[in-house]
Amino acid sequence: MKRISSKQIKKIVFGIMLSDGYIDRNGRLDLYNKNEEYILFVKDVLEQITLVKCHIYEKYDARFDVYGYRLTTNVTPYFKKIRKIFYDENGVKRITKYIVDRLDFESLAHAWMCDGYMYHAMNRKENKVQNLGYFCLEGFPPEELSLFIKRLSKLSIESRLEKVDWGFGFRPKISSLFLQVFIDNIFQYVIPCFKYKTLLYYKSNKYLDSNLQSAEQYVIYYDNIEDIVRHSQQ
Image (cartoon, rainbow, N blue to C red; front, side, top):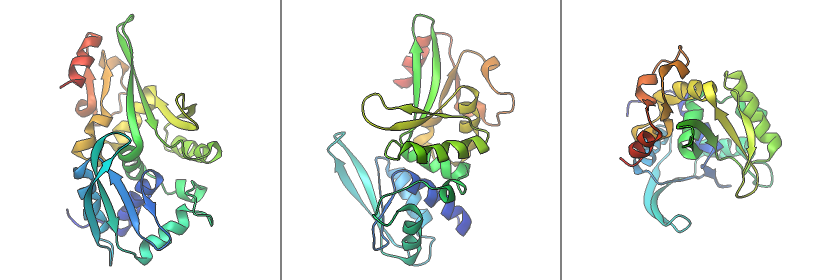
């Protein structure tokens, strides 16, 4: 990986910390992900920070019966500073206005890769599908998620909080043209192993925002809803 600026590194770190990243009291970052490609990407980014060294090992996740990869860093002053931004005095991770004001599409791309997912609501009776995007951030209280929603709005992405049906909390939800604009803006930052989280299904380009830059790379057209089922099984 080519060297990137400290500003860009911080954007990536903020996206990771908004989602699955954890920093202990000593200043050691810890990240688990099922995709080795992503973990190796993060390692290349973080080791551009002065004094940072990363260690990666395979880890079994009993919750989902899968193996993934855990990355940990050494203790550094850099991550001690980041911890003060993301954790309160009781060690609870928070979303604050300071944090959301510094989120851009590169940060959001990493939050999406770690904790976002695309849901395709299929209506077989009407032979159509609705594309829905969710951030799995239900660990944060609604008032903090509202700050996240407002930040998305400033980036021209309208969204709303939706209650988690099978548990507790709320998830930010993006749909319709706003989901198209969101995917179009994060697409350049999404690495190959997570491109599946950018796929949008439409029957015609008449349903697309005419200003999209990379639609041909993440939009899949279908005639029949069974086309989507077949594609997802490939």
